Image 1 (cartoon, rainbow, N blue to C red):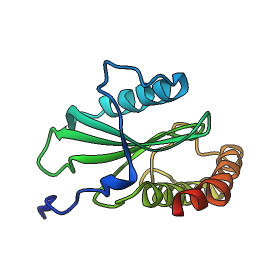
Image 2 (cartoon, rainbow, N blue to C red; image 1 turned 180 degrees about the vertical axis):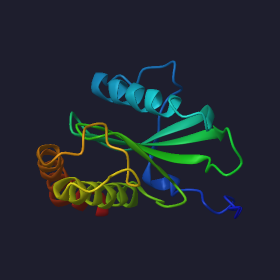
Image 3 (cartoon, one colour; image 1 turned 90 degrees about the vertical axis):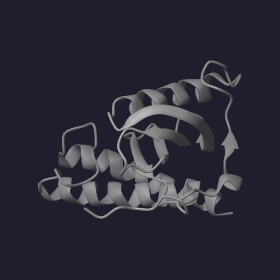
Amino acid sequence: MVERNYSDAKPDLTSVTRLPSADKSTGDEELDAARLEARKYLDFYDWVSDIKGEYLGYGADGIIYIFLFEIVPGRPEVDPWIWVIVGDVPPTYLPAVDAKTPYEALDGYIGAMEEWVEAARRGDSVADLIPVNVPASPANAEMLDSRLKFLDERVLPELRE
């Protein structure tokens, strides 16, 4: 097994906003609901022992939220910094070692989801691709594809600036 050194894997914390502790509201109902969804998504995984800190990388009400979590890993091979993307898209996580900024996280998300869309359109197995919480059907692929195009054309350029 190859061991990763996470000492230099820290994301760019200048591109995110620290959120208050989990027991405090941000004052924004949509943001708080998305934050709760992201925390619940992370709680599903046994490799997350605890959440030490949370940051907002980007938010577009009702469309997409990109959060950065600093976790206490439950296993040594797990990166302590995890991006979680939620909203009107399938939720997912990305290790921050693979994406240092919200832009890189969303760009990686779009790319991984596009692979899923193409496989679902062809009727290929999606077992080794990013998990998506709907059946891999051509109809679901088309719905997701339209959301991905919106993110790629409208949201990603905002994050690049």
